[in-house]
Length: 338
Image 1 (tube, helix red, strand yellow):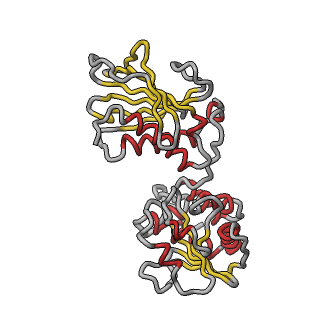
Image 2 (cartoon, one colour):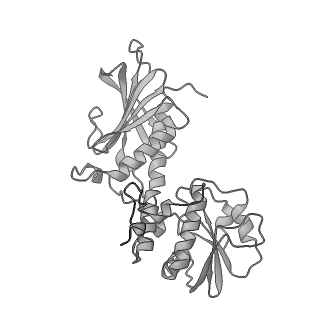
């Protein structure tokens, strides 16, 4: 090997080509990468089309794919999968929400047998008129597809290109949600990574987002999370999962528990024991401790618990929602009402 072809000692080698992009907006970067992979791997494009068409009872051979096709629409769809006898327009979302009438505009395009679909990582609100349209593709019982619906198909394809793209999807949290049981997370031989992830997302959503004074810290077990200084008079909120409640003895089974540590320990507790209910119907028990607990400058008078089996749902998004609802109910006991 000549010296001109040798890698310099201080040169940084990129491990994944999809991490290198001219696009500043993550959604544009992902759409461009997704389009490139599907155009190079038509067998994967066929697998994607099969997933999109399955619950409509349709099958079609993929001819080609294109990025941001010209559809005589003010806002172009992200993707077109052209098949024998039909086309599929696909709208991609990562962080953004649907624009007003976005899917409706695609469905109103005057193309014969053109179907429309939405793929997003989190639950999006899809208008009922779209859901009722025969040319809108969605999984049975769901309002739209999720990126995790396609991860297994990508990962199962041979070749370095699809494997690197699967790793790229995993880095964006697009792997399937496999946390199915409240008991599974207590296997000490394996850190419950997915539980840790959803707990972080829920705590961030309720306490840390837009709050520069607040910080989140995980635990080595992956079963708990500390929310530090979320408010001037709160030093710590500790959230964790335990197999049996330490303080609420009549709860038989795993629970998600929360303790709130207030800065001024001289203020007597004014909240009574009660059962609070989240918008999803999960019962959250508010329980006064027989003996207050101290942690640094804060004192905890109350613990909150809810059955973990009711919080862990079949998708990441639904589990985060249930956790966030529980934390929001607890937040309402301490934050001034808006």
